Length: 139
Image (cartoon, rainbow, N blue to C red):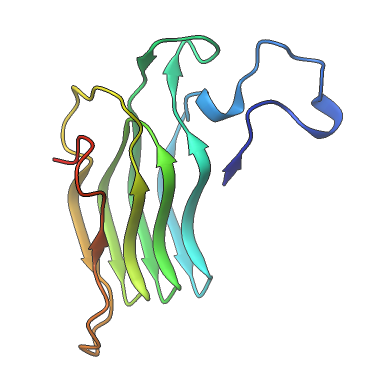
């Protein structure tokens, strides 16, 4: 999904207190992505906060049970905040998981990836399972 800083289309200008790129995601569970360019794409920025508009603290978001296979990329994140992935199967994607950048945020939740099987390419071509930031709270 692509989140912009403020509402567009018919909602434009009608909700001053709605901040799409920092709202909490209520649920992301039991999804499948197959034969797409990117299985799950969060772009360009997703920095969930509490409260969403003007909040200072991060709001942990959990994505669970994603099955992504035969995509160009299984998961792509551009610039995301306190996002966690649990119980995913990312198989035979060009690149299983690509995480571009973490903003300067403090994370006090469990690890960002838990129980994730990430296989870039089973042919042995050397494509990666996980590409992640070199630092920025990656643990």
